[in-house]
Amino acid sequence: MPYGICPLRLVENFSDYRGERLITSSNTLKKNKTVCLSTVSLLAWLCYLFCGDAAAYGQNLNAVDDFGSALIPVKRSMLTIGVGADGQGTLDSYIDLEIGFKSWLLNFFYAENNTPYDKTSTDTRSYLLGVSSNPINDFFIGGEYGYWGRNGELTINSLAGVMGLNFSDWSVSLLPQLRAIKLYTIGRLASRIPQINIGSPGYGVNATYYGFADWIFSAGYFLNYYSENLRRLADSPLIIYIFSPSTLQLASGFEKSGLTFDATYILNHGTIGVDLLRSRSAIDNSVSNVIATSASWDLFSAWQLQLRIGAQGVSYDDSIISFAGLAVSYRW
Image 1: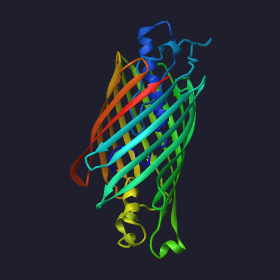
Image 2: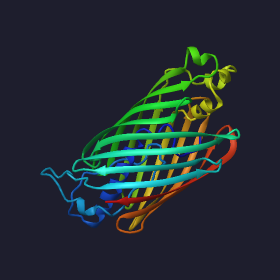
Image 3: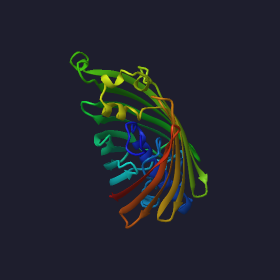
Image 4: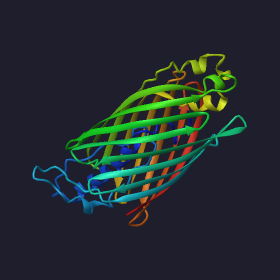
């Protein structure tokens, strides 16, 4: 499926939190060598959101405990509104609200997606609610509930978590998740078996290095399990009598595993970066490759503009799908 708002957005919001504070703390260290921090984290698990501000919150990085590790108050909030599109006519829009308290973060995310398919279109909605401790403390932890899908076609309810450790130049994280997937049936079968339930546990691991000048590098791996053999969605000739074309299209985005890599360069008033995603389908074992570049600019003291462009290709098709996104953030 096109690289954008997808059903696998489960724990990336914690990466968003840590990505911003990673860049913030790294930039502050370069400007104020008297601040001793054991900091940072990971950037994007599925790599499709933007990095945060690089310099706006240095004034908050001023509390150090007796052992020299950071006790950095969060105390900030941010509202992001974004839109996106790809070469196949898919349209995305989302709103992301982060509320910072003294020692923890609350996040709410809502998105809508419209994907054209066979002279019609499929609309999906997703939302999540998450909470986490300060992601640049020596140890951080968080959790979230998420929903994605279209009622009567395919829905996913998920629980996900994150736990990680920060070292002097490194951060490592473990990201477990559990999804409850429902595929709704059609025809006569719907009266007897209205839906097929599939359990999908999984996990991700990430490592981030931020000790090289103004660069930040992050790499990750994720693996998903499914209680049913999803290859039957592609192999069985009877599947079109069980599920609607829209349901099968939505299910085509299920991934078995993937590798991610991200490189970000910190500017005085923003960031530029590139990220890669290579994933394997749980439906037909095909491979998808995504490359994207992103940039952010601080327009004013509280406003930021974010731009993202990229392309996706799959192993069974020579065509390339291009995509782009634009977002505006306000911080307070």
